[in-house]
Image (tube, rainbow, N blue to C red; front, side, top):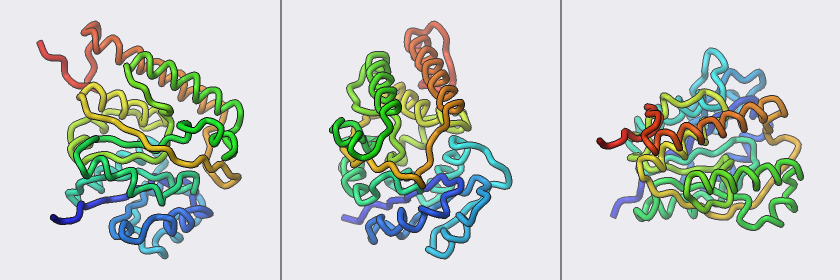
Length: 249
């Protein structure tokens, strides 16, 4: 039985200080196909990544977090992979957990996996998650679970894995170029009845990790609620949208 083809993608913006640490934490057997998409960084992200042997694609202009992921998945799918892993290159997410993350996809149990920092809530605070973000995470998670009909412990993870079939099905090119992209991905995957699972991962906040500032964070939350509302309307055939699975007549 052949080994699965796994591609790891990193959407990057000014990650020069943490790319190397993130890369070295990835298990050696999974370092063969790593793609970093640089969203017009102003530091040495590209130079550091190339020195590590990572395949790099550079955006000529800054497209945003979602726009960066679109390029990541476009390039990753050219390898005809079994699994695509999205890993933030800011050393906030434990890359040693990737084998555990992808195993349920390889086995066919799930189509979409993510690492949750909130399964053990006390560890999230011990790992440095700011108090405000901790409570926002919990409140929004509870609301999303109720609306989407799921029971996840987090919805904001930057460590995710997808089957190739999922990325070839969901219309991710129609999603936002901004931070709400991840929320749209989850909602769309659920609308297509893909199976989603989670594993616990440690929380690791530090001064070099990327973080959404107040204005962008507020915009992200408002957009999340907007698309949740749109998801409900689509599910009940009140207002159809191409972001989610077509409704059968």
